[in-house]
Length: 38
Image 1: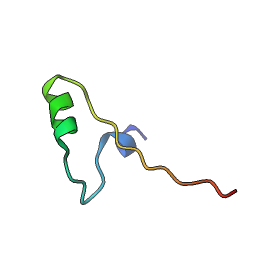
Image 2: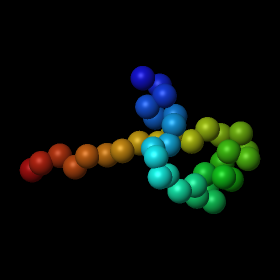
Image 3: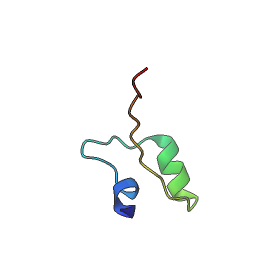
Protein backbone atom coordinates (compact mmCIF):
# COMPACT_ATOMS: atom_id res chain seq x y z
CA UNK A 1 0.00 0.00 0.00
CA UNK A 2 1.26 3.43 -0.89
CA UNK A 3 0.17 4.91 2.44
CA UNK A 4 2.60 2.58 4.22
CA UNK A 5 5.61 4.56 3.02
CA UNK A 6 4.05 7.99 2.58
CA UNK A 7 2.94 8.38 6.20
CA UNK A 8 5.42 8.64 9.08
CA UNK A 9 5.03 6.17 11.91
CA UNK A 10 3.68 7.24 15.31
CA UNK A 11 6.27 9.13 17.29
CA UNK A 12 8.17 10.31 14.20
CA UNK A 13 10.24 13.42 14.88
CA UNK A 14 10.36 15.77 11.91
CA UNK A 15 13.86 16.74 10.82
CA UNK A 16 15.08 20.02 9.38
CA UNK A 17 16.05 18.12 6.21
CA UNK A 18 12.51 16.81 5.82
CA UNK A 19 11.07 20.30 6.38
CA UNK A 20 13.44 21.78 3.78
CA UNK A 21 12.54 19.11 1.21
CA UNK A 22 8.82 19.64 1.79
CA UNK A 23 9.25 23.41 1.44
CA UNK A 24 10.89 22.76 -1.94
CA UNK A 25 7.98 20.59 -3.06
CA UNK A 26 9.60 17.17 -2.54
CA UNK A 27 7.60 14.48 -0.77
CA UNK A 28 9.33 12.44 1.93
CA UNK A 29 9.37 8.65 2.01
CA UNK A 30 9.37 6.75 5.30
CA UNK A 31 11.08 3.36 5.17
CA UNK A 32 11.90 0.84 7.86
CA UNK A 33 14.74 -1.61 7.27
CA UNK A 34 15.17 -5.00 8.89
CA UNK A 35 18.62 -6.53 9.08
CA UNK A 36 18.79 -9.90 7.32
CA UNK A 37 20.25 -12.74 9.39
CA UNK A 38 23.67 -13.95 8.30
